Structure formats: structure tokens, C-alpha cells
Image 1: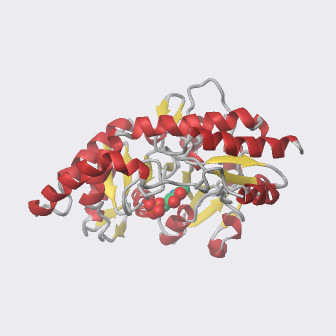
Image 2: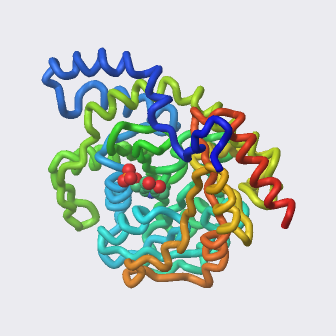
Length: 374
Ligand SMILES: Cc1ncc(COP(=O)(O)O)c(C=O)c1O
């Protein structure tokens, strides 16, 4: 069975939000084509300046992808072969891949059940004399509890790099997530909240010297730091991506409001215990809803019912990354009970700026009824 207009309710719609931008993109593209300024031109420069300001940091460097951004940020935070980086198992593969690419060791600690983010209380237990950095990930756009994380980092002289791939627009205590940590990183993958039309990423830096080093490395210049020589290579943000992103950025707030409206419709049908809860309410935290999740023990049954009603859903991250084939390169601290449980219970519902509100009501009703029936 599908909805009355016979259309499935999809998880994403990458095209509809592009329609109001199309003419401007085409005009700019023609100019770009005839400019000859194809690499690191004024579009990248404009985007870096605007995003640095919006994220409340001094510097932003456009790079080839969110994965490259993570790898570069960790390297320039001083992560070297054999170092340990404490992070979450409940995240996308790139989080641990970036650590492993540096021949460093991801150390996974458990998450909080309310927001599915790294549990700050588990971090200190995982620290050894090899620990160099902590990498929180605001998963699905939910703010991580940065004050205790930064306090632990300061106490043990560790670096904080935030994998903000899913968290553009997220606020922690009224300030953008990108402004926490020594560096933070963004992905412009087309399904992200600020989407490109291909790959792209950004590193946000508090320190000018970090930004300068990343600019060097993304353009084939080697960097020597703490007696370690890091090779340069090509990791530049493409000028065409930056051009599209500058146009999409102007519409970001409006699109975000539509996503938030969808989330508030779902909230009406879904009890609080089955969805994101702010572990620190009334402190100015704001989730961007990169994804909207619902959790329940009979998750697979709920997914089948939604599927039969024409609603697309997804399961993230089942199993969590402690089961990844790369786990022989990783270390685990404590039992990852909440991450395992989230892997078994979480279901991702459709959310995007072009989702008709009546579709959101329809999805919410089905989920609410299922949960009420226990
Ligand atoms: C949490 C997280 N980190 C890193 C990345 C990597 O970003 P990219 O696909 O731009 O390399 C993603 C992308 O999905 C992500 O969700």
C-alpha cells in the first residue's frame, strides 16, 4: 500500500530544494566556465569566510570531502602513528577511517541513550599515555555535551576535533558546534543539511597556524610539526561545489525551518522516551535534525509496517563500528551497551526540507499507533 497520491514517502529529496536555485546556478556556471579560474577561486574564498563567521571561528579551509577534513584536522592536531583517539562507535565509518589512515588507534567508548552521542563519563576511563585526542560526533545533528569533554581534554592535555559532518547549524549552549574544539569538520555530501552537488568538506580552526598548515597540505606542500613530517597532497574544495554551496547557504535557514517543522510534527505522535531527548535541557541547545530517529524494541516490525505503507526508512548504525571489519585496528573501553542497543532499536524516518507536512503527519500517525500498541 502506498499513500493516496500513489507516491512513496522518500527519505530524501535532493532535487526540489534545487529548483529555486537553478537559474542562479546556471548563470554563475556560465561565468565560471569562461573565467578560467577553476581551482581555489573566489567562490571557495567567499564560502570559507562566510562559514567561518557562521560557525563562530576565525578560520575555515575548504577541502575535498568530510573524510579529508577529518584526516587533515586530526593530523594537524598532532595525531601521529600509534596515538589513540577516543571516539564513539555509533557513527559513520569515516570517523574511524580517518584515525586509522594516520596509523593511529580509534578507542571507542559508549554513548548516551538520550542523544546517542559519546558519553562524557566514559571518556576519562579510556585515557592512556597514548591518548592524543578526543573526537565527538554530533550524531544526526544532536549537540554533544562539549563542556565536560573540553574539561577532560584540558585536564589531560588532549586535543578535541569535532566531526561535525552531520551537525551544521547545531548549537550547544547557544553557540555553533563548529566553535567547540581546536578544530571541527564539515561534509557537503549531497544528503547533508548544507549540500553540494558532489563531494566537499571544510575544516574550522580556532588557530591561524592550523588553518595555514591545512591550506599547505591541501595543495601539495609538506608540513613538519612536532618532529613529524606530514606529506602534502591534493585535497582542495572544488570551485563548482563552492559556487553551489554559496547559493544553498543563502537558503539554509529557510530549509532548516522546514526540517524543524517536520520534526515537530513527528514529536506530536512519538513519546519522548522513543526519540531524541536533550540531556541538558533549557541551556540553549539546538538539534538540526540531519536525521530524525525513533527507537523501539520491535524496530524491524515497525520498519516493515512503514514499508508496506509506502514510507522509506533506514537503519543506522546496525551494527555499530565496534563490529566493523576495521575493528582489529581499534580498541574498546568498557561495554558498548548503549551503542549496541541503539544499533538494534533505532529507525530513521524521512526528513527533508521538501517533505509535505501532510506526509509527516501520516508517518507520525503510523509510528505513534505502533508505539501505543506496545
Ligand atoms: C559522521 C560523519 N563523518 C564523516 C563523514 C564523511 O563525509 P564525506 O562523505 O564528505 O567524506 C560523514 C559522511 O557521511 C559522516 O556522516
